Amino acid sequence: MDIKKPVRGSSPVPDHIMQSFPGDPKHEIAVTWRTSTDVSEGYLTFQAVWGGPVRKVKAVSRIFKSDIDESYIHTAIANDLTPGTKYTYSVGTDEYNKGEYTFETEPEHCERFRFLVVADQQNDTPTCRPDYEPFRRAVQLALKRHPGCRFIFTIGDNVGDGQNEHQWNGYFHGLQGIAENIPLMMTTGNHDNRGWKTYDPGNRTGKFYLQHADFFDTQFALAYPRNGFEGYETENYSFDYGNVHFTVLGINEFEKVAQWAKDDLAASDKRWKIASFHFPLFAVQPEAVTGLYQGRIDLAVEEGGADLCFAGHEHSLARTFPMKNFEMFDKPSEGVVHYIMGNTGENVYCSNARKIWHPYFYPQEEKNCQYSIVDVTPDTLTITAYLDDGRLIDRLVIDKKNDRIDPPAPAPIYHKTKMAFKGELLEMPTRGTYAHNKEGQWFVPFGQVALGLGALSEKKPGQVKIGMYGKEATFTEGSDVAETPDGPLTLSAPVYRGDRGHLYMPLDDIMQFFDMQYVYAARNNILVFDYKDDWPVVPQP
Image 1 (cartoon, rainbow, N blue to C red):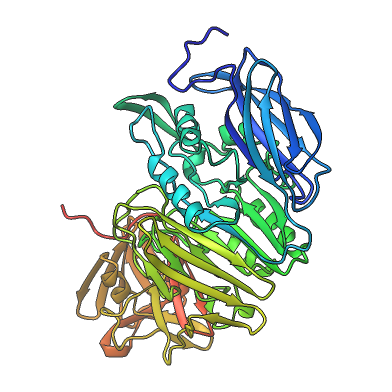
Image 2 (cartoon, rainbow, N blue to C red):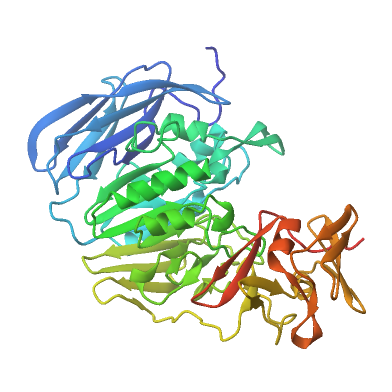
């Protein structure tokens, strides 16, 4: 194929060099690299630093046709390695070779170790030659400040547009000198599935999303364990390191991901279990959906026995109480702590907010990078979050032996049933107004809920008209029929006047009419409403 090579295009000399765990980190390491089609094979050559035989492993070489280039992706797996040993290595052919770099196997009986966590490092500056300089700087600082990290764990949106190779060229440009010497274990995010049909400077057109992260799957198909569910193995995989089991969840086919994750976590007998899923199941974005609309992956990680679930996507830092079926608890044995990472790419989001399930939240609206260091021992898991300027912004200790979390944060338990939308308490419009349960049926003053969301809530004597998400209904005191533009809506019970004189209507009918869902957290005595997407705010004409 006659191709005019792009900026940072492939050449006969290996680049995009990355190491990862394809299986047991005590005995195996994978190294992946790229060359132009001039070089159709390659080798991994390695030797223990203390000496011994020089070994050579032939790579599996696969053609990779991207939007701008055609190249070979080579992956070689070194196995039968000695635990706790550092090796030097090089990759390529006799004519075109790169090295020396190092990799190190997991020690025997590894009960104490640390790793680095980053998220949302995507970058598009400059557009067709992204340098990933913020990400590079943050990782270099993190590894220097916190020596001994065994690998880098990403939580998705590794690149800005995963279907455009300009992005991957920039990503590995930023990782030069890093990914060659420390394993990179990636979770995929929505940007890894995304691309542009034309990716010219100032003229990106035809944005699209795929049901597979095709470029990711092709490049890293042999870099990670192939133990995910069929058709999505590269985006979903799991691995063990020391006394921790890691379950990495992709963002496609939520229901299949949930079932696989539940089974994968449950099958592990490791002391600690950590999941990663790019979309927060307990979000901080005001409009973001929860696990109710994500295949109930929250239930999957709970039933699988996860201790911790990392997320990203929202570019702000937050963590939850131990969660189980939307109920908030105090002890780590009672649920899963969801840890939402900030961004590692100077990618500012505004208007994120703390929700009921977050004992800690940091908005990260400064143009900086955030990373976390995780220290694992037999009895404790400590997550310490930093900004790239060195500021410590959070520290969380999950103490399995004593079944406690530090800093202590008792989950709220409300005297009367409160209401929240996507986790945000509706305090002002519902002050002194609570949900009622009558013989097992919930009734709510939904006119006040709509008012608190910025939706239409138009009151007349004995009536309230509610409009949101493109639908309207008028509810009348004492009537079990609501009027809509499409005709009457029969309710399961009459509307009545309740707390502070507000009109109460049957919750199940409201949810069905507006295409919403709700969950009742019995332990905390709170109803949480949710909608699959978008804002309920009425626009100003």
